[in-house]
Image 1 (cartoon, rainbow, N blue to C red):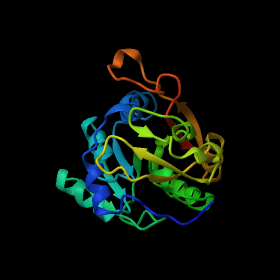
Image 2: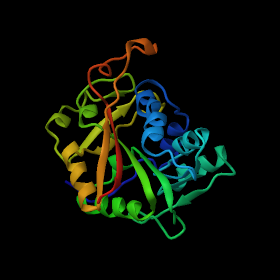
Image 3: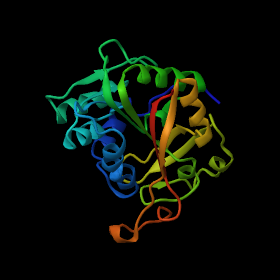
Image 4: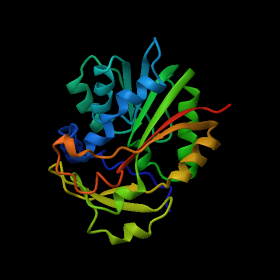
Length: 245
């Protein structure tokens, strides 16, 4: 287990590679059901949203396309440069590791965290950031925490490969795992932090939050994608989270 945080996308080559990615293959399942989850759990009239860990702004633009007044925050200056180039009128905030910064104030009706917590090590940082996000939610606001299922590191997928890393199968909460992205030119392995599903429940509890709904998206035969493991095993988990009590 490690508490050292290293953002692999704070690298110009990786950032440029990731910037070309939209929603192919396995990534389609990450975003396919988010509009429905928002409608059912976070459909508020003011519609102010924060994309926490926005990277190159893909998920921020996704929220905007679905009618949200969204801004983004990330620790990678290289990724934010790309986000601003694609969306010059957007609000994108550079934040320090473990600190949301004073200019990301809220309140937000919706916070979307797409893959961000995959790269945040240790209980202390996860709980601290989750607590900071809770403090920025409007009354009745919701956080959508989109994370990699532990299973993503143990199978083959349309968009990912893990066959070169058999050690992933023994990994437990807090351990480093490796995965290769197949939809981008940069095939260097990505290092993530595995976090089991029950451990996320404990993070929410310590941060004064609770999971309201868990969604595990599976591929469908009628989607025109040559699924590998996606129809039987969910690569992602999407938690709808609210303030406890």
